[in-house]
Length: 193
Image (cartoon, rainbow, N blue to C red; front, side, top):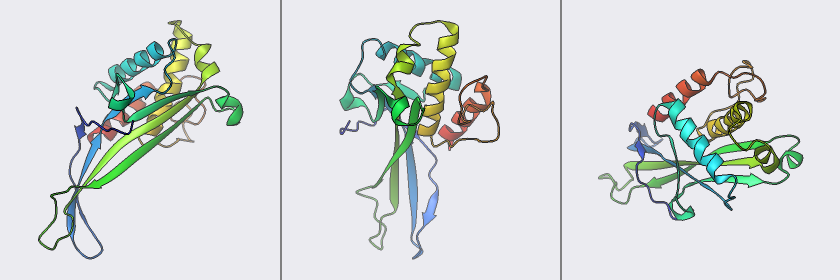
């Protein structure tokens, strides 16, 4: 995943920032999440492809894509045996990543950079046993996989836990009924900012 190929990016609005010395520069945000299952598993790859498709349907837009190979990906799906034991019971982890670059030809008259580009990606990790015991299309198992996957992708989209509302998909405990509609409103808002 060292080779970033930025196609079909979300080009986000360009705010103008001012440095402490008064120099203004523009920031372009690129939100493109091309996921790839690290160490592909024949049983799990179709599950993650389906979860990505379901996420996009719920979001009403293509937020995530599954990359054909690691070279085209910028975001990782990792499945770890024993993650639940190693993390005191967590069956998933998610984090967002950002890489900032100054455009080569973006210098102002004073010789300072005038344009900054920020590229976003994510890393999500899941417990192997959790997913292996939930393979297939059983509605209850499907809902459990969706809640965990969507929650960890939420972290990859810079969402924090909501400790107040137990029905929020970003509540720390994903058991029980969750409100997907509110979660996906937040996803759409994030992608448009």
